[in-house]
Amino acid sequence: MDFSLSPEQQQIRDAIRKLCARFDDGYWLEKDRSGEFPHELHAVLAQAGWLGIAMPEAYGGSGLGITEAAIMMQAIAESGAAMTGASAVHMNIFGLQPVVVFGTDEQKRRMLPPLIAGQDKACFAVTEPDAGLDTTAIKVRAERRGDHYILSGQKIWISTAQVASKVLILARTTPLAEVARKTEGLSLFYTDLDRTRVAIRVIEKMGRHAVDSNEMFFDGMAVPAADLIGAEGQGFRAILHGMNPERILIAAEAVGIGRAALRKAATYARERVVFGRPIGQNQGIAHPLAHCWMNLEAADLMVMKAAALYDRNMDCGVEANAAKYLAAEAAFHACETAVLTHGGMGYSKEFHVERYLREVMIPRIAPITPHMILNFIAEKALGLPKSY
Image (tube, rainbow, N blue to C red; front, side, top):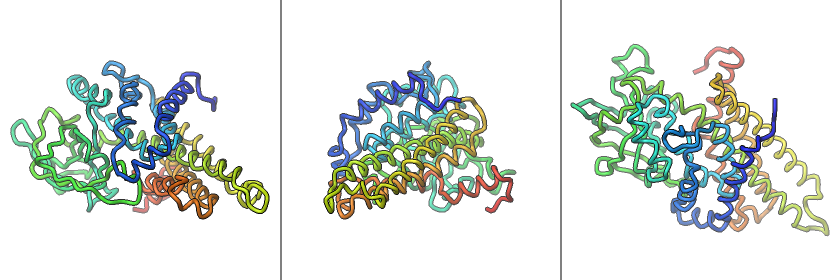
């Protein structure tokens, strides 16, 4: 049992921190104001080969694990890039795991290298307005016509669709009423995003303005049968290979943004003098910050435990969900405490912590709500009856 990073893992963290140092608080404040995608960060990470950190070496990746990917994503968020910087590359890191696991050699050669090189940007289209977390209830239809499938229907809360050239999309190839099990009849595709057959509408939202969230309306978009990942009707099984890595990575990102907020708050508490003493000398300021530090470090241990289990091909659903819950809650309280530590200036964009607080709501809500995680833990870890 070793709780320290290996020399190689420390090198990853140091290298990412060095790259992210090029993008200071001013850069992220401007992106938040303009809503422009951080193409520069994406390009720098791609040029240095980091977008393929967890992809097979045979296709241009580094062949490392989700542990190393988590270290990388945490370092990006912790740099001050917060969820904006992490979300700019988040999908590239874990999203094509179904292709790695279920794709043919031809598909891997065709699909993975352009994503790793940064030539392609991809969005992940699963969520629908009437389905939410009930993925088996999705209604986007994919009908086979010769050597193509025709996609029609609506998706929502799809990140990076404004800048994506590719889409990983889950659709029904067999109607729900015609399958024996509701997890059957779903198929996964990774294909070109044909904007002539898809209307994409930006959702104005609370934070992370530089990484878009969208509604997508598919109107007969043709998808080559060659872009079907795995067997038809077995797409739900395929996306499961991305769920635990996604929870682990977003948990790592949450710890990163919490640490960024805590760093800002501690600096301000040391420097801000009121009544002739630094406010950090007051236990009313110091204790909440200390509490946040402990919660973040504890959450980070669960993140690393979940990642280690995944990389050993061991069951990690309970740990991955627990990591996501603990990290999101710890990060939220750290960001909230950072704003309160700054007092009135915490509400000012000048000190950046208000941006962290807005963005930290993402890991609390997505990709699964805290309430559903509690349901999952109660059932799987404690053996309690399923409640939904």
